Length: 122
Image 1 (spheres, rainbow, N blue to C red):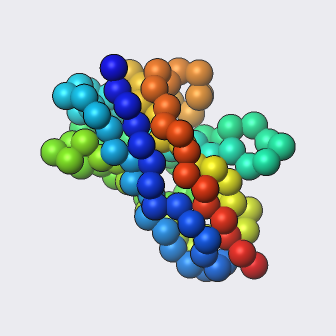
Image 2: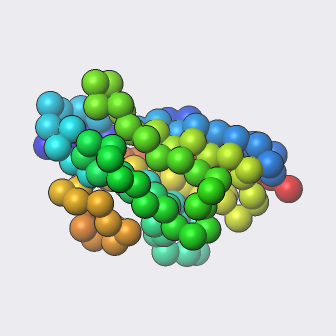
């Protein structure tokens, strides 16, 4: 069992930056691939980024590539999402998730956090 708690969301102006954190409980954290997803009002949950269990590989959606960076600190049981050059269209609730392998498909993840709101003003 893994419990995930996101933090770091907030209100930021376009062009600004935020760093999201996802703290995981459980000694098995380092065996999981981790992903970040987001969901805007009235839209489906959307893949943002994912990272392998050891941090060796990362994958991004085209909409955030070059602006967002996913990383993890297994010693701290935490995964991060550094978001730079934020745009109003990045506004959404951001969720972290844990799964057996990195994927852009939400249904392949086993555990989810409660989400953190990110709002980007123009």
